[in-house]
Image (cartoon, rainbow, N blue to C red; front, side, top):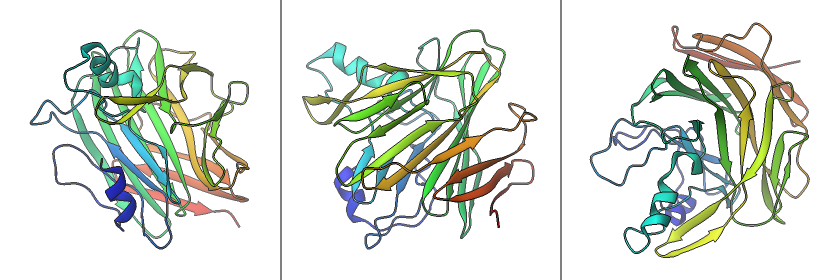
Length: 288
């Protein structure tokens, strides 16, 4: 993604006709500088530029890049570093045993409305395991991401996130992380009841050829093998104080089911959020 061009170009939610991606879920207007989240989950690309990063995304909010892509760094002078930047685990997506995923992406749901924009994509990432990711963009303010590891493949499930270069706070006890800029930041937090642990991992950002900078990155490790699920809130916010925000999956949730519903709370509002793949429907209702 051209970071400078996107920041200048007002857009509405749309699906790309390119085989490379299905971006963006969110609305973005230059005058409001709304959050922009651009997910990527494609079928095999027509060139070698594609990477095993299905389900990944980039996040821009209120005038600042908050969770950009890892970048390309180089095409030849440092083969080891080039290979590092192409790995699945250095993108905002799911891995099994830290392995690179296969490229077999497809879209299952796309729906936009005045209250919520929703997309569901799926990738047959590993033998015996499909990664399904649903993103809800709620009230033009925050993103909820449901990652489902569907199948019976054995091995460790990790969900990876990378932040923009700069200081950040990674709180393993509270299962959350925040950037620490003076003007605009992002809160990334997991379902507080989930059997998940957070640990920091190596992170780099490269958007100029031959140059890269360190950045904070972390993985969320599930205590259970597949089938399993992660529920994550990604909340861009102005200022330095993160909002109170939480999202919890109900006990009756079934990994891989067409229909899912749960509650999300943030900015002093609670929503009932859900999707139904069979009915091609999605909803987001604020509580009175």
